[in-house]
Image (cartoon, rainbow, N blue to C red):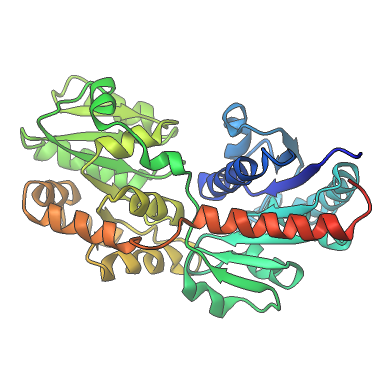
Length: 381
């Protein structure tokens, strides 16, 4: 009897916002199928993306292609992009022929385009998971060629021209993200159990403007004695920030990037963060209110749109970068965590997901149904 196996390819990278939803879905599909059959999952990415830098922690083999996105400014490197696309399409076509996936899953970013286009040409079912309220260019271009689209925000539907089945599921996060131990995390970070804790979170690449605003606050006004910081600076700003806060006496845990985000979220009472879709999904899952700072150059102003659901639910306030000269974001966050408003916002963010199934479960189960349909319609095992 042929071996029972489910084969999947996941394509989505460049930033954590594309990579981590793919990891969450892949892990959940594997968990749900592993008692029934062997699961063969491969990821596709490039050497330039976070997927390569974090390849040892993905948990699945990583296939590499050579492609890059178009730079927003005029640059000679853009002239290479069409040639890289052609080369990557050929490589993906051959890769899909070799791996014979039952389903291909794209979670955005330029790396997803050649993989899903090659899958469509070979007649392999493909699905997309779109994180943002305004779909990225990759999603908009691939929408006519896929069977399913899972939306993080319902309002993204209006921008998609497709006959695919569209489901507004919310954004997928790992179940483990909500299972951090607060006491253990605060102890391991070297912080106090008696202070309120603010998390400064710039996303996988950090947020330079936010880091600079926090530095100005610390060097001019400092922190109240009953407040402390957990600060993810991003790789690029870490050395500069560390040099400026060294020996300042702040209650502070500083790091460029953290793999144990479950512990980080458990230790925090409030967040100061960008309004990236994955960040918001994790904040919602962990019941963490926030002061949100939308990235003003995000395509379609999608971060500002992403944040509106939190603001409408009274689970967050928004401060624009243009207001940094007149508003002290750290002082505002400190005022919230030291007042009754913190509890009100915590209750509001927890109510946002009350009674709703986790997106990762809904998406994984739908993909498994598609795998089973594909297996019945093909002759190979």
